[in-house]
Amino acid sequence: MKFGFLIDKTSFECSCFRVAPLSEFDCVMEEFYQSAHVSNGWFYGPEQELKKTTNESRKFKERGPVNCLSFFRISTTHEITSNACSEEHLRFLILGYSFLQGVYLTPEGYLNLGRTAYKPGKLNGLRLSGDDYVNGMEAINQFYLSNNCEVRKQMFASIHWHLIGQSYYFDWDRFDSQYKTLDGLYNISGVKAAFHAGRPVELARKYNLKLPSWAKLDSTGKKSVLSTQRNELVHEATYGGNPIGFSYPDENYSLELTSFNTKLIAAMLGIDTPYLSAEPDNRDYWGWDIKDNC
Image 1 (spheres, rainbow, N blue to C red):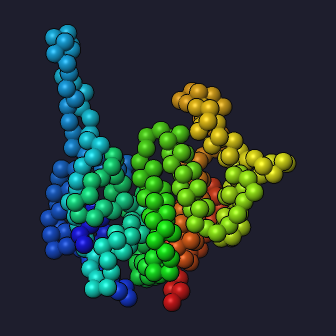
Image 2 (cartoon, one colour):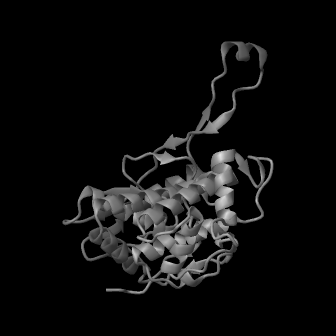
Image 3 (cartoon, rainbow, N blue to C red):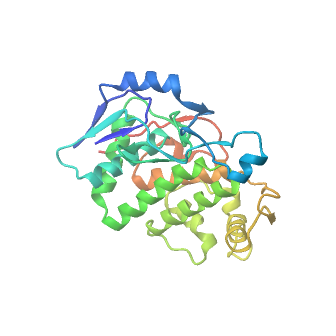
């Protein structure tokens, strides 16, 4: 199964599948560097001038605004091959590889949604090297083999939205996407919390993660800064204590909630990495340094 877009030329072989760049990899790269619309680690779809009405064309002299297409296809760069894996299995592995790479990779024929990260590590702050490729993908493959269809589907949905959600432009949209990711992970974690606010607390306890200050419960044991912010956004159309767009919360959810979810996903997939012990507000790039658990 072909997939892309990835600028990493590394090939590797695991127990039942192999990942390698396509023979046309260099040509695809050359075309990308010549024609791609990029900014700050993201690349954008083809530009399209929006049409004006007949009345607008008579009154307004400037051309219509130019937008980048929200749905577009990109060239494939790699292929995953296996004699044992179904198509569903391979799609899960491709998404798992996306998580490791910190970019969103799509099977051939699939559309990209909005701006797409092209710089490895853009969506996770982590770098692959050496044995990380095999050790990480073997852990992801073992997760797939060890779980039923419903758990696989929920993990797929959580990783998918964890990555895609970071492409949103507005802070409140990124917050909403990461909270949905958190809820999805809770649903398959096996932990139980008496109240909604207790979910990240119990998840952090189970997977031995450092709990961000905004997830700590208040004196009632029923609320946290995070749960209050979520309820205001979902039920009251406010963010940061005001109508959406008027202010921002003091908490840096785009960094810290995203990082918390990255650690949760890694831990639940069985990926043993020192990054799991990182402080909630850590801004450094880390190497995965994934241990072999076989």
